[in-house]
Amino acid sequence: MEKLIREVRILKIYAISLTVVCVLFFILAFKAQSSLEHFKEINVERINIVEKDGTLKMVISNKERQHPGMVNHKNMKQRERDAGLIFFNSLGDECGGLVYDANETGSGMVYSVDQRNTDQIMQLQYLEEVGKDKKRVYGLKLWDRPDDFPLEDVIRFEDSLKKLNDPVASKKAYAKLREQGRLTNERFFAGKTANGDVGVFIRDTKGKVRLKLYVDKNNQTHIENLDENGALVK
Image (cartoon, rainbow, N blue to C red; front, top):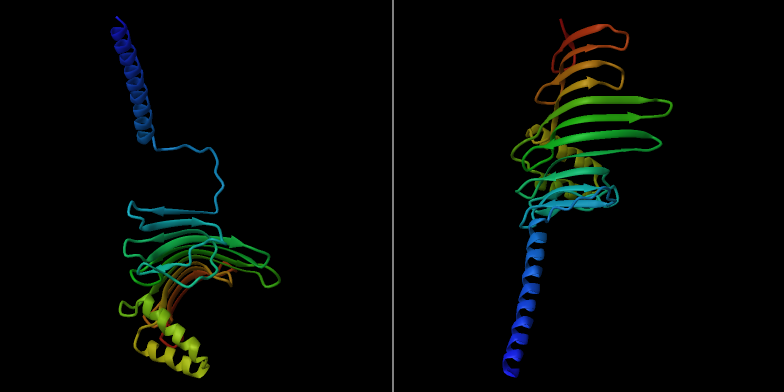
């Protein structure tokens, strides 16, 4: 009889232990499935959005902790950038972003789209200078960038010129690049200019304004066809 009582007691302990383990298992399994958490409010200086393998895809940050940019999975030199969002592609390059700020001298907000392996080719921008000579510019701007002069080469080129510290040599080097068609050229702007003109302004492959369709600040309409020297073609 004592042996039977002892075996029953052991069986009860085993059953209770097994029940506790099962309950804990189900609780942990439920938590694993319910990984989505809800926050009513959160204060944070920076958020990194990454893939499962850790590849960086987007940064939401304040000004102090903003990402400097990235080329071929390598961070660029630390620099001051405004708060906002920076986007990164699977090649490990920065591919655009949205930044904004304002202070005593001006305000600005820019949404950029970058060309593959290089810098921005399209921007939706608002820029304003306050004070005595108040200027305000906003609209859509497009650029052309060469395919054979990626951002890594641009950075190395500019760094080498800085080390030379020779303005004359720098001017000649940029002139040579321009002759080779390897510099960035603005091609298009639609919006409001600093002098109050609102319209469309189109440039040629060398960055020279060739066509203007706009209304000036006095409500006068203009359609101007310009030659490569900037002279009006009637």
